[in-house]
Length: 303
Image (cartoon, rainbow, N blue to C red):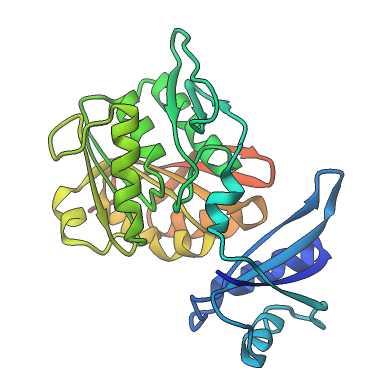
């Protein structure tokens, strides 16, 4: 990506633009956007950033402006050097301890401690190194689910990114069948590299991980391998809402669904869609501005 557009505004305005982006069915996917607070000591001051691989056109700027319900804030446009910004942004990330998992980039030392599973996840072309609040929250929730005595035999991790959450689930339920998918083809190589680094076996048998590229649940192998005891999806609120019926269909009655990637302000919408699909909340936690939801499919809800 060689160009960036930045807009500064109060948090509710930026969050509103992010929600509008999720609902924009005709969005140009060559424009990648994100929103974040400017500094920890200014939690109400946010920025919207958009990255493009081309010089922004009037149409690009108009599409961004249309995300705002009122007058759009001023846009700052800059040309960026030819750098893999995702990898660059993840360099030097501090290790995290979430549940029974310690996650770090190779630049940091492993943690050798009883009851702790250590993972080295390099900065890469995929999301999910563990430092983001949603990924860390999922690791904590998976640990809690195991502590509650869940018996899981078949796992699907949708939108896996680096593969970390699939690795963690296999650690907790080491005899389970497991499949992971991502819409981004590059994640296949990323997950396979991370599996080798962390001693995770790729394959189709119990205790092994199958990896594939798929848009949501739309893949024949995902259908054949189901139904699942546990589906994990750490993606975005919009896709979580759209995929709720597919997740419910893929689960056994009484099966478990772990959702993340949604802001706390988006939780009600996601829960409403999940409830309509036959799922009920089992537990929630909030990590920063992000909600992590453990839901269960109603036992009387057919597949």
